[in-house]
Image 1 (cartoon, rainbow, N blue to C red):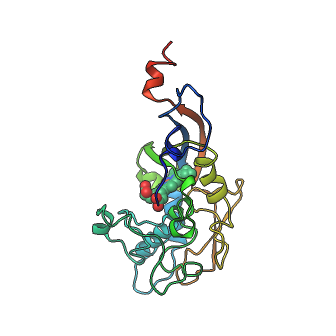
Image 2: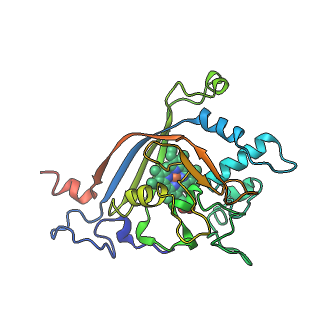
Image 3: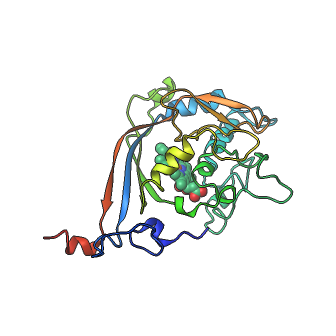
Length: 256
Ligand code: HEM
């Protein structure tokens, strides 16, 4: 997928929006910030309580499988589209291979087959690859974890007492095509990814259902049309939109 510079950089090649004629914004980018609390002990308990039945795997392995299917990647980063049944740390660590997938396979129906990756997986809902070629809805993102590690007491109680999570940022030349689109039109929308044999439900990591219980389909490999109900494990604590100006604006127009 080739993404035009102007999807991320204001005034970059093929930015579709008319920008100020004096060019002071050119080279900048709009920045979305969110403080996203992560309910880690609650998430871990949910994985154990709802681990899919798979012959020959321990409870912890089955819980890890459920978590990997929610995200679309194992903890090592290895994509489940390439290694659906067990983590492969060598694959996860290999930058030549760990992004080389698009959810298609030989003799495989991309509209019905969730044996590799559920339609609802976080990385599939937010970047659908061969499901939907949508370069205009691309972001550059990063994050910093905040808060302490889960304490022994929190793990034992399966409950958060010290807030922790992700300080999330994304850059895009249009907020309504970038962050807002990925969150509202894709992650929160139970119908997306469209055109499948089942409605996928919300993104299990970041999807919101107006605070109500969410329904996510396809997480159990043995029951790909079945749904799991879950509360939110990621809770937005607030955020803001910013314009991140180019250095030329900091030394020029904005320096006066
Ligand atoms: C606490 C909240 C979040 C968690 C735990 C989380 C977790 C992850 C993980 C583990 C990955 C795969 C590794 C990587 O590419 O970095 C990922 C990828 C991604 N996430 Fe998130 N994420 C969160 C919030 C968000 C938000 C708010 C958005 C956008 C609205 C988002 C959009 C994406 C995108 C676009 C990808 C890349 C997909 C790809 O290139 O295949 N994430 N996320």
